[in-house]
Each structure stands twice: as structure tokens, then as C-alpha cells.
Length: 329
Image 1 (cartoon, helix red, strand yellow):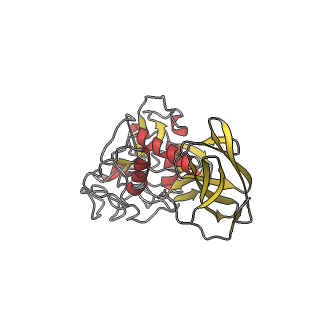
Image 2 (cartoon, rainbow, N blue to C red; image 1 turned 60 degrees about the vertical axis):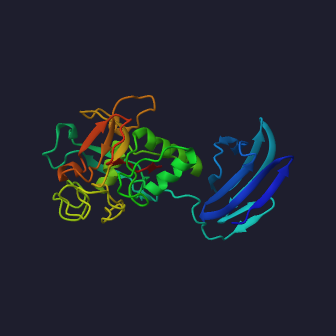
């Protein structure tokens, strides 16, 4: 990839690794600085300098400043318009979207709507009641659970220990052995790298996305069927043995894979035995109460995969059948 040195003042250099318009009304820039610990400001807001620094910026003019010891040393003005990115000294227009600098989750737009939440069909546990109607605004959800290849890159960049794969393989399998705190740290890091706001979904957001407009126990009906998911009795080649590669089964009507089975998924909500409103919000970092996880996993019986089934555990839990997927507004 060609490197363009835009400015050089004294010993500090701002380097544009690439610039491209990925879609109408948005542009992507990747920058590095020398020295690497210089402060980067975008439109006056300080950004974490974890090279390379990746910005997704809306259409319009933006100011990028590089400071050392609080003193401005470099400045770059960038105009994003008509699917082009133009700076003072270089113009890049009508470029094909560049390959991602690092693996990151594919996001699916979930439409706004209303749904009946909890054990609609009856026969569930007491903590799946009461059934109530909830309105949800549109949002984006990762198509599948975060994969090892995505999480491993984050761990490498941040100097964190990589979680065990339990001998089942990494790559496109869902990451496991990650705590609620691990999952939240990944979402915060991804937000810093992309300029977008990622987090774990609330219980409401998770169930709405998993049901995908249905009211049955599973999005495909009230019977588990065969080879629709990975669980104890699901009839797949991975049952009771190991995790399946993500999207090994048909996606639900919203385009999401593996909302039932394979691995449990952390949410950002506090677990309550009776619903009192915590399902609508995310717990704070200083809240020590148990967190909810959803969806069931490969060693669980089919009833645990129902859209309304829920459980909770301490946020420090790391287990071989617990992973997560991401929410983005």
C-alpha cells in the first residue's frame, strides 16, 4: 500500500495510509504519526492513538490535528463529498472500497418495530414472565457471534492473552472463554478504531433480533427440527462435540445466524428473576450484579435454545460455551 507523507514539521510526521469513500456520505481514513505517542484530534476531539488510527467520517469538512505536549505541530483539512476524499495535497476519488485493515464483525440492519417479549408459548421458567410488549428503534447487530479471528486481532493489538479455543479451532468459529468484561473491552476498542459506537445488546434488543418478527419458541417454529442449530439433540454434525463455524445454519428473517445454539451470548443487561426494567438498559461498568446471557449452546437441550430462555452469571465468568455478538446504533 502506498504511503503518502502529507506534512513534516520538525521531527513529527503525519502519514496517510489510505483514504477512500466506502459509501455515499461517508469516508474512511487511516493515519499514523511519528512519534507514535503524539495526540490525534479530529474536529477537536481527542482520539486514542493505537496505530493505525482508523476514522469513519460523515460527509463534510473535518480538521485533523496532531499535537505533542499540548502544542499543535500538524494540521490536515479533509473534505468528504460526492464519494470522494480531498485533502490539501492529495485527492482520492471514486476508489473501490479498500480491504479492511483488520477483521471486524459484519453488521446487519434490524428494522424498528414492536414485539411481545418473553415466554409467549407458555411452559417456560418463572423468570421468563411476564409477557409484555416492547417497542424497539432500528439498530445494527452483528450477523453472527464475534469470531476468533476478530477477537484474536484485538488481543494481539492490546497485548491481552488470547482465550482458549478448547481444542476446537479458531478462525471462523465463535470466540469462547471470554468474560462480560472481555466482550465489553472488545466493543470499546472497536468503537475507538472505527469511530462508531459498539456495545453488547440489551436483553430487549437481543430477543427482538433473535425472534425476527416471530412469536414461536424458535424463529423457525415450536419444534427444534433437525440441523437448524448446534445443541444436544439438534441433529447437527457438531452436537455435543464442538462449536460450529459461524453461519453453518440458515439465518433468521433478519439475516442473523446462530441466535439459537452454538454458544451463549452475553448481553449488557443485569439479570433479574422478575422483569423490572433492567432488560431495557445496559449495566454500568461499576455494577457488580450478574449479567444476562442468551441463546443456548452446543451441550444444552433444545428448550434452552428458546428465544425467551435466559440465564445470568457473574461478569467475570469465562466458559467454553459463552461468547457474544455486538450492537451498533
